[in-house]
Length: 149
Image (cartoon, rainbow, N blue to C red; front, side):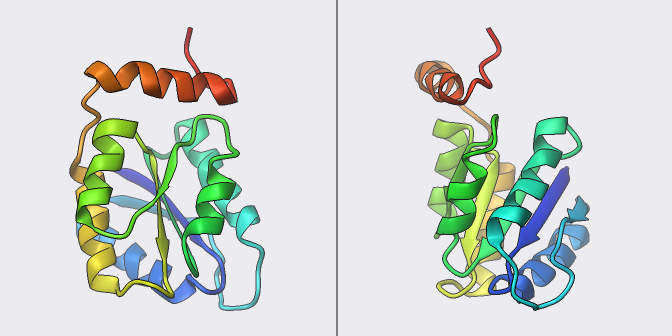
């Protein structure tokens, strides 16, 4: 899978671990930065990664900041992105199955790398169920203009 990944300074170390983890699992990973631990603004990097999704250069996005919340809010401002803050494997799976989430956000200050890795694998493995969830996702897409009418 083609995955774009980004963080802020608080999520830098975890992001770097996830880049290696995803590559070891055979994924193509585009590291959208930052490239060091200097202070940065998370919206800049969230948008940079989400633009890859929007253009089709990535199939999923992974974002990491201190809590995951700022990245998720920023990502959800990008048309076509459906970001979820994920805390465990069940949330990783269900945000895909029911909400067709395409952006996984994690909090480096609230979660250890092992649970993030397991949650991320659940996110990447799960497929959207469609069915009764499809109209809800279509309604969300109409909110940001990304609906394909």
